[in-house]
Length: 83
Image (cartoon, rainbow, N blue to C red; front, side):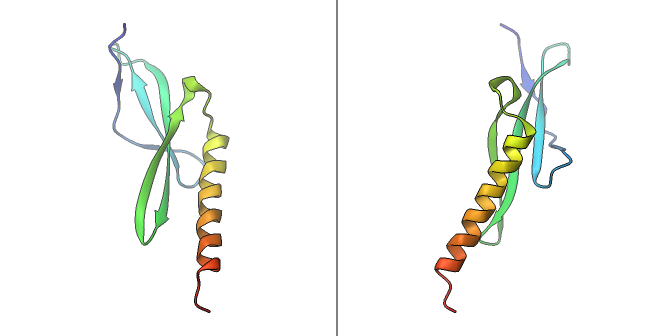
């Protein structure tokens, strides 16, 4: 089995709040990507790992997942607002 490691630096994409980290082998060759999204919840930054490129996760899916979370937050705020 190959000795894999995750590069800790988050690399930004063209989509707001969507990042990825590279998975490299012992020869420092990129063999996979791990996608993450970032959003704000209750005035603090949250980060969520979505999945690996090798598992079928793509950039557009991550963007859609982030949008779903943001819409859910806004809906929650509208339902429970005091105004």
